[in-house]
Amino acid sequence: MITMADRIIDKDMEDEIKRVVNKHITESKEALMRTEKMIREQQKGFENSVSDRPYEWLLGTLVAGLILGKLMNRRD
Image (cartoon, rainbow, N blue to C red; front, side, top):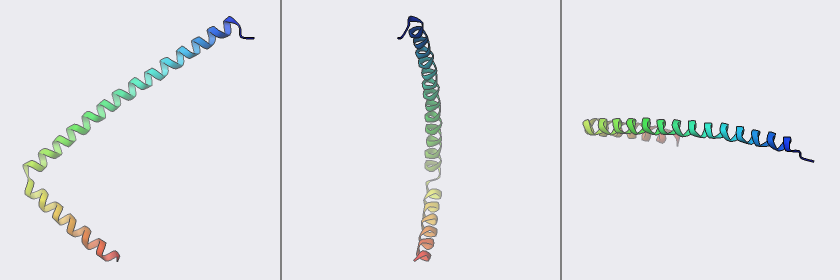
């Protein structure tokens, strides 16, 4: 038989669980927002770097492609 005291304890436990879960959800959301902001800043920095020196990036990708192609040919 469930007594009134048991119900109060269950309600207190439920409230504590909700409080802890909500706290973790809030912290996770804040961490996600910080991460998103950091990624956007890095993306913007990368885009600026490419637009400032497009020929260097084009040459770099060409060289990287040639190296990868050479390495893949060796595997066969």
